[in-house]
Amino acid sequence: MREMIRLSIFRYDPEKGGKPVMQAYEVPLLNNGMKLLDALNYIKWNLDGTLTYRRSCGEGICGSDGLNINGVNGLACITPIAGLKQPIHVRPLPSMHVIRDLVVDMDHFFDQYRQIQPWLQTITPVPEHERLQSTEDRARLDGSYECILCGCCTTSCPSWWWNGDRFLGPAALLHANRWIVDSRDEATGARLDQVEDAFRLYRCHQIMNCMEACPKELNPTAAINHIKRKLLARKS
Amino acid sequence: MRTVKEPGSAHSGLSDWYWQRLSAVVLLLLLPLPFFLLVSVYGGSLNQQALLDIIDHIYSRVLHTILILALIIHAYVGLKVILEDYIHRIFWRIPLIGAMLVMMTGFGIWWLAIIWAWT
Image (cartoon, rainbow over all chains, first blue to last red; front, side, top):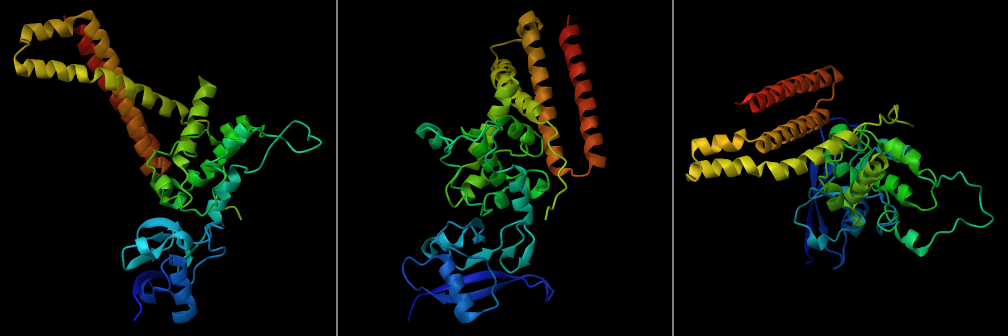
């Protein structure tokens, strides 16, 4: 007899109406390195085809399967079953509108990402070849460029829960900082102008849930503090 | 589709953040002093006259003034940030912040009058 894993999964179908429920499932332990996504796939393919969730690459790069796992946000595809207390409670990302089961509406999250204008902005003429960057300047992007926009940090942030309509949230601000520190970007002043706001930036009270939640082990709090220091340096 | 009609940056927040931290440093340095006096009085190493002599001194009055100003600034900014966090309706938020500012200013003036009117 194979070892069984017990899961309790959030179910909600707006077309059927009613309240969301937690549904129990049992899945066999398929192998020692089994991840949570493998268990969800097993349910979907063998037990209950109606279970709905997002997944794509299955290896922590696409950021599709950000979920609330036993109360902590993370990616199902890189979360090992072995370290999880059972029954494993799987819920959609907190404070998000649920479209169905574990699928949430990410529109507002990506809209906030768009607001920080996440592309290289320059005023100098385009050089004949590429815009060069020294090894040291490139190294300053480490810890920022790895972000896959899964939403685990932003949806774990209490400041974003209370003021998500105005506070940009850790993910968008991590990316704002990524362009502020980029040696090739020439819009630093405009970028700082854009975030200098009691709500857009300063709602961050260094709760650090973002750092705990990040499946890529990045530190959005440090990035936000860097923006605050840049603003301070500009004014003093 | 844009889910928020974006009004742009208000260029605010930096001064709140700055004064909150500056006042915190001042409080860290000055707040232990009154507690030190209190412990000395209860410990018996300072009698009433000696305590009054210390409080009466010009340096004490200056430090006392800085302490009260830092305390009021720190409390005002801290509570303002909390109100901004949790009170979402402008109708409530602005009068509450205003009322808090008036009360704290009144308290500060009263306390400073006590410090400097002391003879």
